[in-house]
Image 1: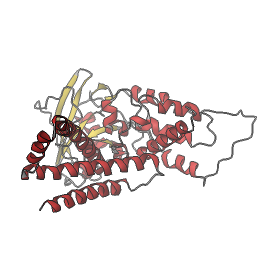
Image 2: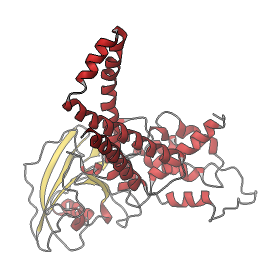
Image 3: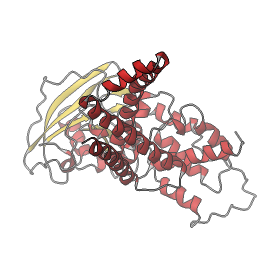
Image 4: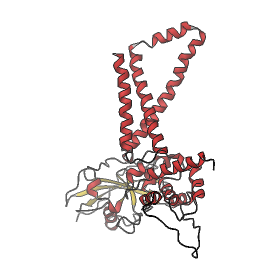
Length: 113
Length: 270
């Protein structure tokens, strides 16, 4: 339940940026662990990569791409907010960041089909 | 007139007086003659709880009218603060249905959820008693942010020219009408999480001074706002701007301070 004083677009954009960042931080050890299997030769890496062909993992990759995109576009919005001349259209920019992330994630999902 | 009824069924809310529900701007209004169900937080620094009252609904009634009615008709010992009643003094801010608001200019019709109001003291400030909070930590942050005028001339010097159309003066003018109500301070989650954070209003004040052609304290201001707890601690959640009753944009002011501190660092001056 979001408390009443937080129910506005820019707070939700902040929350989305924070949550996506935390989830990506949780993903990174798994990512490096998988790449680390290559240290023991090609076979363990190929076995791990074969596991990622599982449809469920493929679908989870869509979520990962969305998280990456929403964190990147949200971060670009924050950089623009802090370093470019001020724009009063912050809510529009936040919505655009989410829309671009959804489009990026959607494009990735479409190429899975 | 409906007699006020005080019930003993208030919700225990020790250490959690800022929560509430139903602050929807489109919430239903109370018809004249009906009664409002009002929960008012009562207690002190050690904690407290909500007490329930029935208050007669009136046309064009403000939340401050409701609190005053309770104090005058039902609970003479209720502590709260107000002065001007016209949105100038900034002393009557409270948490209404979970949202910080100036109560003298907040109409009940606009915020009551199905004829219910929950009124609590402002978040992020120590409670003195009931709805009155200690504003000292708020004003101490103004001092820490160098939120005072830094004169550079005497009365014998010519006055510094101020061009009202200059970009800097426009920035200052856009941020200058702060009434020190602490609504932004109560709305800010960074203030709640970081005891060192100066908060939106003091940083907004620092921004007006930084853009004031007559102020000679530019380096002192930037030193104050660039340090720990300064403008760089802001997470740009925007709750200050969303809830400022005067329509100011502290988030814009803080972004301006971030640009000014970054520019100074890039120039190697700090």
